[in-house]
Length: 296
Length: 296
Image (tube, rainbow over all chains, first blue to last red; front, side, top):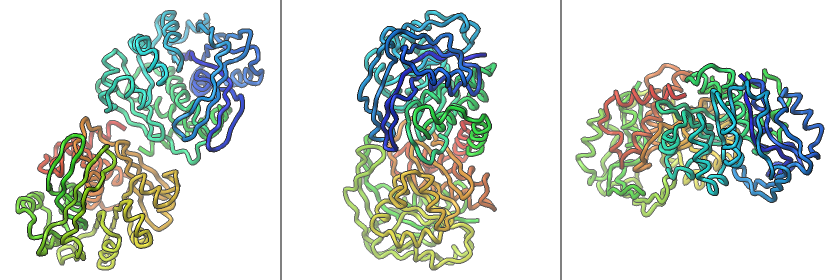
């Protein structure tokens, strides 16, 4: 009942209206793995350069994240830098792929016993490589972004056809399906064979759409956002980490999974980089999940 | 346990991306009264000119709305015309106050037995006149809009200090309180003595904020919006109409009231003018309310 997370690992330099941070641990699989680690044993699959800080390896180990799928290549770690002029959109200043340019995800032997897989927000071609290498997973989920939708639409469609769960935000699902109404858009994704579409709506929460059911969840109220980077990854990681412990994709397991994803995303935006989600007491997460239940 | 609704009554000419309508029955108290009429006996207080169409009197009577507070003055009925370039903002083309210019709301004797009052979206000075004239109401609620916040802020503050419940949308509460975070904004309104702030978030639903509780409700999914005019009034009318039948402002009564307001607002936007909310089967409303419960 473990979760495998495949995605990017990088060092991010981020500026927001609340401040800035330099070369902080980031990347889609890092955020998602840490979020997942509170709920299930988690395996990270990705690549770093030989400059990856020992303290960041230590941080992942402290969260009991299995690092057998984390390769170290000679060269520099992936770096991204961006500015948030407003809270919803980052403007990229620079992207240095470095060792990530030659990344070809390989699931180590230890991942063979896992039953859940999260394909983080990376090139659809890499997501397809992983899909080609796996068998007998209970649930496979993918995340994506506008960049892949614009440039690699056909490959992304191949990915979507092969996953059970898709995480997507409102802008992305409208862009991909050309439906303005998000419920019509979700239907179009379900028609491709996906069982569950989870649409992220930022401060307005999320909505899970199945063939014959909908579930709305509010966002956990955040008094002061510091850094939105990784919120979507934390949502997906918390969701999939919880779901990996469940036997069925039921009404109840979906509701519980969404609430956990929601809480992890909220904790994440309250601090820069991964600082909001590391070293948290499970009690903090549980009490926020309970509050969310009471508030609906 | 009846509800009194005070507000505007007019004939609206509306153009939206879905079509247009000419001199259709509208106004804040009309939308709110009809929405309320499905839940409790409702009294409308307002003014029309002697050109007010007999079929519209008939429509209000058919919904068992008490018309003793509906005055007819010599002259023309209030008229408004507007265009929706997008679904969230109407651009006013013309406003002809006509008989509404001399309106001074008077609650007739029959309203003395009512225990709930909704001050629809009208000039705060008129809302204050009504507040000066009433005694011993269980719940008094007000609605407002950006126009009154910009121009009559002090009078609006006097209104807010004297009501139990305030309906407001996200843009308005940010404008009024100068807080960007809606929960901080709601706290500022609660500090004025309001018991419950209901923040309307359009397609994202609504959030009710009390001193020590929050309740989130999603919007009822609408496949195709025709005309958003009156959605906020229907929300407030449905909410207050249901609440008028309840003994306490409890967790449960607030949740139930919000769901009813939500369903009435959704029915309303599915057709032009009041056509979405008139002559509906109670069963249609009940089943949508049940769906909303199941979806959270």
